[in-house]
Amino acid sequence: MKKCLLACLLVLFAATARAEDPLRLLADRDFAPYSMVIDGVPSGIDVDVFTEAARRAGLEIEIQARPLETVLERVQNGRCDGALALFRSPGRERYALFMEATPIHYSDYVLFTKVGAKFPFNSYQDLAGKVIGLAAGLDLGPEFAAARAKGDMLVKEYPDQRAILAGLLGGEIDAFAGNIDVTYYRLKAMGLTSSVVYLNRKLLTGKPSYAVLSRAAKRQDKEEIIQALEKALDQMAKDGTYNAIARRYLLRF
Image (cartoon, rainbow, N blue to C red; front, side, top):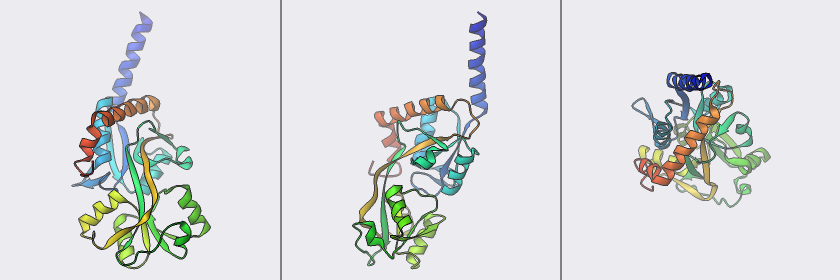
């Protein structure tokens, strides 16, 4: 009887603690339509999908939008409970627990350049002498990193996509690396769809991004949280909820 009472009290305590201590998550503020800020409120496909997943999992969450560098820094030092959504890499696995069972979205990355300034891009050797822009903190995988370290191209980092586009149009860079969905969403908003095009070779194809929890965050229920959210995300992918949410922002879904 005492053991049963103790178990009930522990369950009640955990539920109360969870209700009083929502999961604090960060999202990239410059990654529309997946994550962005609309009228001061974090919005986008990832934000809406994860909010619904948390509801199904019985979790209370708070999502804030910050620059990608800030997101990565706070996940690393535990100043937030987690983030959405990040590419998986050995470096990030040291400080983040990835909800690997179900990606929150997939990405195709290419090089964008000005109309009339296209150049051949069949291998990274074709980028010799070129200046390539990208968002600070963006991980484009080992092949890009190796070419960058080798000096096949020069890389210039920018704080956000608006600054990258200004750099391209202003002649600071020859091209920039961008997610196709995200870049065209921004180009359409800025009226620049006829001014910027992308090169045929893709940097990344169907690269999965995951929600993560911070290893350094002071929570005792991380594994239970991950399992509950992975289950909810999987259900949403199978029952069509994910596509229904994504279609609010992108017609291709």
